[in-house]
Image (cartoon, rainbow, N blue to C red; front, side, top):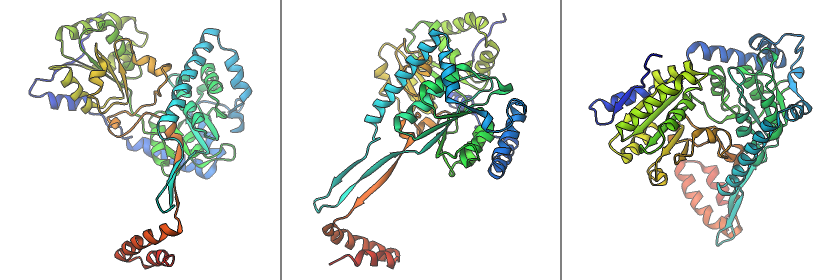
Length: 441
């Protein structure tokens, strides 16, 4: 095999800032043709409901009329979900249930610790103020089903919704040529999905957002999809909530040079194998270690079933960056704000203290990112494309909403009324002022 090398950058080079910016450059915006197609499909689903959903499903997923003559026929019964679970080989079922238990345990703890409960307090005059937390009535879960099947995504999206107390979780998953993945169906059974439909694409997003004769409208749509799904989610935001617009997967490894280079190479592969647009970057202060990782990449690449995808990803968007020290690595990591950040070092928590922007932080040489994808417990739905600067992983908090609670006492109305009256007159809103003044003694 011809020698394959991942590009190398040096933080001390004069052009480093420009080179890093070019490396990170990626437009998440859908092109005009995709956006226009998604808009047309959404409008059609909104206007024609089931009929449009069925037509697009037959067209794009190659489902013929004999396989599904109605949208109702595209629904997967709970019995079918349970049958898929019961039909799994024992090792797969055990792994799926163990992962689900860890994900549930983590999100139950998250619910306790992250402000997902109602609270109130009383002022000295008896006025009570607080917050009422309630779950969404209904959430829609989009599960990709084109190039690959993702039972782990079912767990990561459905379990926090159920822990939050969402009344009904509706799953949609495309099944090209009518082929249903048993692991995905089994994961839906384990996670407690209430209803599931074999539809995908922009038409599934439209059905969830607007509702049809068969598919109920939801309050929020979560889960990743292709460019058409992303464009559709962007367009229905406001009618429903969405979790995020997900971009290609990313991993950033900060390594002090003391981890097995084979481990680091394979961790870079673990994201590169997702697709050609995925990004894998190593930051390290040790040039000899970078060379060792490069040798490991050369050694392992021919063994990878998805080597063509990995090669393209690493060639186009990968890099190994020589940094001055680990502190500088953390500075650069904050500017990259990666989806997955591995700190593969002897004292990972020391460096984690310096990290401000990352979707998930994996600490220590034994913490491969892949464990987080499947079974560690925290959610693997994470902000991409530098949105970790202002976004968080999917969690229980995404499936609740908060209502402010205000109960003003007679005494409180005297004090607050004067304040409100003064400010309302200042804004020229006399009815606001009078509403407060009428309650003054």
